[in-house]
Image (cartoon, rainbow, N blue to C red; front, side, top):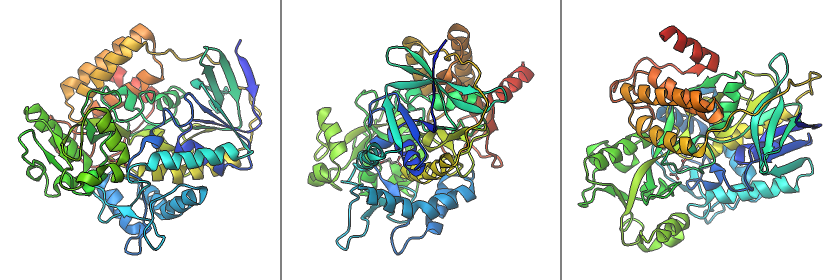
Length: 506
Ligand code: SIN
């Protein structure tokens, strides 16, 4: 029999920007917020280098920001969700500044904003050049630690969602570092567990982020949206590190050039916008150059040069740790899994298809990113939709039903996970095809038979099965066997639906 805690408030799983913002917005409702890792570790939002895109400048507007977001999303954005994101964006940035996030400022006290790919003007509010994620996260952690309504516990990992007989989510079964299991029952549960970069061998995200929230929700019966859409950042630093350090897109915004090993600038051969082409185009161009044996390097020696340590301290430190000096040397780069556009389907306030369960941040799919996320829209989404979900949590009514007994889903052993990560990078990566995806799906089936299906395998299965079903190329999903686009459609799927399709195909 597991130990049980009957909490008198709401439960939040995840201590990134979305979870913490939701916790603050839920005041005065009591919040229990759990994180598997120490605060600031294991969450992608604290690693973000770019910043927050928002229409803060006089010459900008939410409508212009929405237009760029929808253009990047390649036909799959939900315009209503985009209008919320871009309309509430400026206030979300100002709210974080009020909490103490030290955004870079212009001389007259406005927000200093940089240019990133596929934005029609400089719109990205930054902190210390490339330190936005850490600084914003620190400000929100400080506020959450000081808030009397929030209790934060680390070292606790969700192993299953608790549900009552009608399927309503009633909390979570969590495991501590010593393996002890506790059922935490609460009025409502918010998943803010991040993306799935750790499912890929080459990723810019923390390794711990492996799609668990997505998998837990899917295993509980939630509708999942667009799982096949994974974004690969073109310029992870290629030094064989796991995870791979990021060389922010802002470097290209400042004029850094992509070259092959002979020094040839190659991006103009792939897209008229060259280095500022959409992320998926740049990622495929780099992969093509690598496969042709020419290599890919980001040359910031002219555009940034001596200013590098001051303007991009995080990238500079990563280069230095690898024995590279980006002031005088081009940086070797490679595409890496960076962001999951798909996720647990939510409405505009974070509600999922399961009563009692909400989701926010990267594990959610609000519909704002479509097939390809616009740069620096992810911290913004976490802040805007985290706050909206927090308002729902504040008013959540505690149900009278009891949760059914829960058992932890099986874990994937380390060796099996390592093999899966390699296969995901090769067969469900920047360029996909039917043969590779079919082979990968068979591998996932074998792992299910050997180890049982847990949330990590579920997340991988959703990505791969839906990538196989999407016989077209769009945004972050490129099929070499189907390079053209079909009429736009979003994917909405449950595990039961996926299994039914499998049976029908057999
Ligand atoms: C970057 O700094 O290049 C990443 C920004 C983002 O993913 O939005």
